[in-house]
Length: 133
Image (tube, one colour):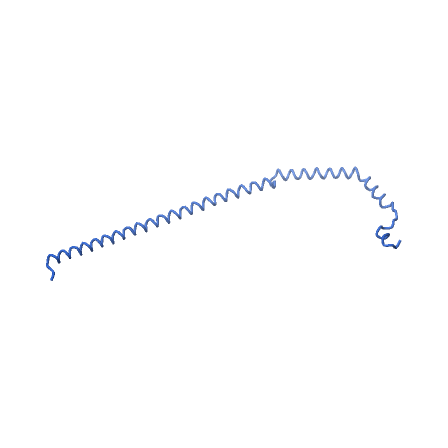
């Protein structure tokens, strides 16, 4: 049988081993908790970064859309100035056409009457090639 001294040594080693195991388990649990906390912080930072990126993207889209609308308005000439300019141009063109009509109306009518009344009968070239003439 085992002597008392050996028994005591064995028991102390066993208890120390258990205490060491218990300490190791505690350390593992603490490390696990720290890792979990670090993961949460990382996820939070990623979420904040995504939200910030979305805001920046939206601001960029809004700016680009505004710039595009502004350029389109300038290129298509929206506004009072452009409408007034078109009205003036149309009025000027209309006056030019009226003046041209008044100056050349008699000449054009005479030319058309001359063309209509001066008839020169001729055999059409297709009719002549078929051999009926």
